[in-house]
Image (cartoon, rainbow, N blue to C red; front, side):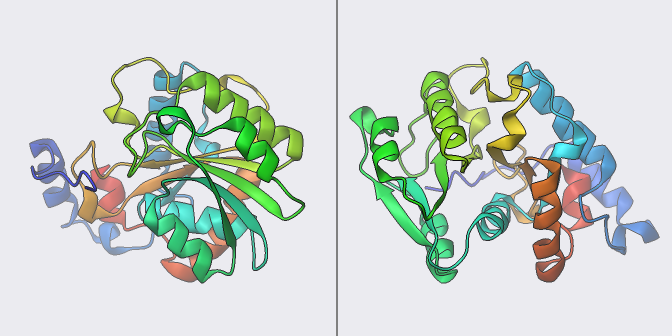
Length: 241
């Protein structure tokens, strides 16, 4: 159900990790934003995949995408605030919000389980801090089309709230075309927060490495939380990615 790969990572990954564990630096902390070469690699990959310009300063490495969501949610909202989540939701998202005293507001699924922008607009209140979309979805398995994602981004911008896109499964879409065109807007960091994982497509779930792609100002706030949690994502995982 979680699409955990039953096969090992590429032999090149295994060989590289086997070599770097002998180096003294591998046991040391990593800079809080993440290994510079990994952040550059992620930015380059996203720039190609989305046909837009994403810079390394937008990338904050985390210990998996689950941690990325938890940190972002805690940066954006606090007890009594609301975050909109279309049904069916990813269970860990719901659990984290409730643990933090943040109220998840559930949006009834639209046609073919594509979330409705109209439904979301009607649910926004003065306590709403973000809209969360998971695409391709878990557990829905539904991929939200770029046009709908763009409409959600404009809705979020209008209300000055965040649009959080969990794109863990972006490599598992039925097309190589961009998942959305949000990064082409020079003002995307004002609204959009994109979350990524390397666990599934690179077959390294146990290495725990993911990324927040967002406004550098938000990433600075995220680093405060990361410093209190794990300090940094494990260096070995970052090397593997």
